[in-house]
Length: 222
Image (tube, rainbow, N blue to C red):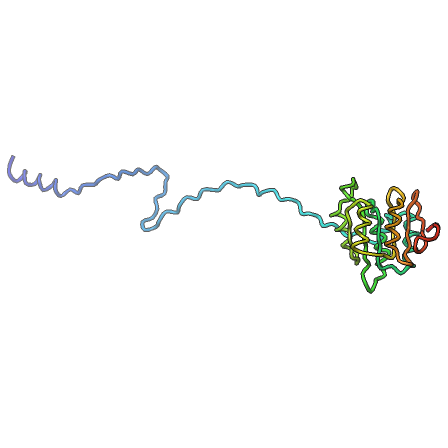
């Protein structure tokens, strides 16, 4: 081979630029990002989760109105309350509260006109410990609606009367609504709790009877 051809062939090979193919392949239809711009990261859609179940809001207990309280009282109870309103009462002892509705109606009758000093209300009942559906805690909450100083004695009658005698002393008014009439010992405790003008109302066969001051006289219908 002539030297000129050999020289030209060597120069032709060295002048041709070598192009290296990229190792990455781009599929057809894929848009390549413009140079100098970072491709936007792919955002994965988060799975939508249902919100946690919300508990229904507690409905506040509405305080009993005077209409609902008076409606819960019997005819004999209303006669008793009218008699109480005519008296000068600052302290009341109730033995046996039952379901508590009569007690609330009585306090409403004694306090709805207003008093310069709050009425002291004392109740003796075993409540849930004695099988009463009304619990001590619930009755105490109900009494907060009235302008009275409530003192609850969750004991049997004999022990409760002794506690009242030693702790609270004499009262103006006594309501006896226990299932059984007072025993001689209980009569003695009631006498110690009575002032000269104290009146005792006792419930017998759904009727209220009134004992005159000092437990000295007989009974008459309320």
